[in-house]
Length: 312
Image (cartoon, helix red, strand yellow):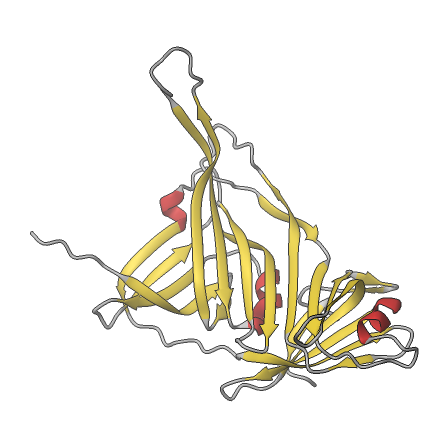
């Protein structure tokens, strides 16, 4: 009897930890064991025994729905559902990570990077790890595929691209405006506490918790070599300033509104110039801290450390 392969493709409707995401371009899932023990060579022909323990599930998610970064990182852990096309059919396949429980299992998203450039849609990529609900939960409980599901309507993201202007406004001193600039990247990861030493009765990693977020790493590249009042360039001008606010206009695409990326608590750490046959590139790197004087920044509440939103 001939065998039929079921091919799945094109994710188009995604919900993770209660947050809907449009424009999801990639999902990567890796299942692996934390502890793998091989018997030592002791005169036998080869390795005679391999033992495994501590099942982990790691995930990466890439999306164009960059205005949802804060919401996803702050959301309570729950099930993630990914709908994709089924080859040769008018139905969807549904791929799920986690379980609604009880007990609840799901992905703890603990890091992300964001990038915007002059030649592509802005993207956000997330890294996470599965928190197994309890010591009875096994792999088949947290990774499931369902075929022949009713086709879901696509979720469309608010796409943005082409950074249009950049402004650094220090708490003290004058603001620096830069345009045009071709690239802006933002990266942040949390310190994660997890139970790597799995107990005898536990199958997977039942404890995955965030201890706290690190600083927000920022990289900006621009070509505005305007001479400042004191005869130095804009990169040098910003390096001389203290803590401040970085804002960047991101052009909407496909009818989407323009957005503004705001980063609070930023200090510039390096400034580099690259001279050659082409236009001189200026590259700045900095870090945003979670507290500035009496102001403590939040992930997804008022006074956020960073945010991508339609300007007020």
